[in-house]
Length: 116
Image 1 (cartoon, rainbow, N blue to C red):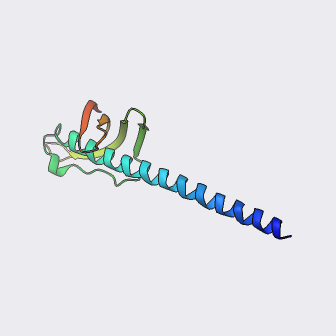
Image 2 (cartoon, helix red, strand yellow):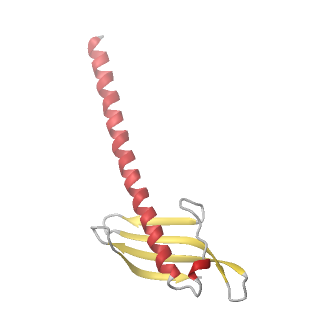
Image 3 (cartoon, rainbow, N blue to C red):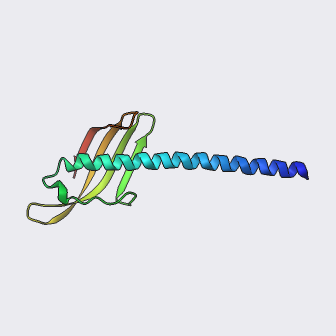
């Protein structure tokens, strides 16, 4: 009976440790994706005629898709953006930005950008 309880307690502890490691990885991934999204917005704003009037959806949102290759520190951000045309008409566009993150995380380089 005692051995059964010790075995069960060990199993519970192992499950808690595994869950905390998975959560830590998820938190890191979420943080990196949030950073990638912020950097993508900066690069997109540089392409716009009136960047102050651009509206980006919050992250996370269905209109934002971010994929990452953690090994290469490469991220692809696809998102919707609302902009105002010179004639004051609100329009929606989709953009794709590919970014390369440097290991220190202080700089994200633009690899490619496309706004449709």
